[in-house]
Structures are given as structure tokens and as C-alpha cells.
Image (cartoon, rainbow, N blue to C red; front, side, top):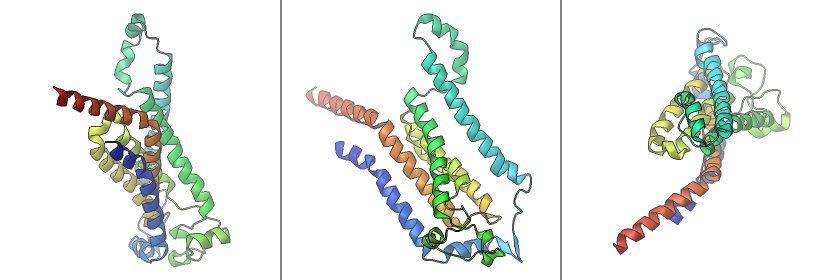
Length: 255
């Protein structure tokens, strides 16, 4: 059981290596360009940037919901921290129970941290890589040449498109899959969040704001961060659970 927990603790490092491999693989292939060519015909992208109702459905709407979720989590944390433990308080806060998610303070703190750290990390990385969007390139009617990541960094290209920040907001919900309370639903959560993140990323690809690899790396990096922070937030919980299982097995064998 200890070996299994140790392997889980280092899963984030494996994911980080996979993220780097994915980024380098697309750097030395034409796959990104070939995929973007599917969305660019006769000098036009399949979708015009800012076109409604698509912008509201796939950009403004999800962004607003995630901001609302963060505000909600902060509110719940404040309520839980200020809630006294007396019987009177139970009656007083009873009306609020229907609005409070059945998660521990640690789990809510983890979710809030993820919602902030994942998009912020991706946004900071964008400012370092200086990678151009497809619609900036001469290949797709723009003015900039197609360069790899290192060349963009050296040239200090006036662009910030890699990794995909908008999609990372959706991928940050991977944090739900690492909550102990929702453990039995983790695979379903992973599937739903993956579809959500790629839907948000695909929307940006349709008008040349991102290459395929920008969203792929954003997904892998988001998963890496959520996994790494989960190993920090829930390490004690996992070890305690493993200890209880071991103790239970020992007691059963003695019986």
C-alpha cells in the first residue's frame, strides 16, 4: 500500500514529462499546421472571432461561470470558518445547508487554489514563450513567420498564445477528480472536464487563436498542476486511509 501511495505522489512528475514530450513532439512536426489548415479555407477561418452567439456560449459564458464558482467557494469557506459548533448554530445555519456543497474545508480550499493557480500559471507561461497564434502567421494571412518555441523566445515575438489559457480554465476542473469525497466519480469527472476543456479550446482554434498543441499542452499542464497540488493537500488523508485499511486487514486476520 505504501508503494502504491508513493507512486501516486510522483504521478505529477510523470505528467510533467509527458507535457514536455508533447510540446517537443509538435515542435518538430507539421501536425499543428496540418490541423489548423482544416479550419482555414479560401483565406478565411471557419468562424469569425467574437461572432455571436458562439462567443457567449464558448467564451464569455464559461469564463463567467468559473469566476462565479471561485466566488462561491470563497463564500462557502468564510461560512464554514465562521460557523460555531454549538447546537444553536446548527439551527441558525440549517437554512444555508441546501446551498453548501458537502465538501470539507480542505477540499474546498484545494478547489479554490486550483481555479486560481492553473489559469494563472498558464497565463504566466504565455508571457514567457512568446509563441504566435496561427492567425498571426504568414501561412494563414498574418505577418509573422512560423517559429518554434525557442526561436520565439529569442526573437521576443510580440505574441502570447502558448499554452492555451482559455481552455486551461476548463481543464482546471480536473481538480474535482482528485477530491476524496468524489473519488468514486473520478473517471466520469475526468471525461466531462476533458470534453469541456477541449470544447473551449476548439472554439479558439476555429478562428486561429490557437494551434492544436496549445490546447493539448494546456490540458496536460493543468492535469500536472492539479495532481501535484492534490498530493500536497490530500497526502495525509491518503496515508491515514491506507493505515486504516492495513489495520482493518490485520484485525480481520487475527479474528
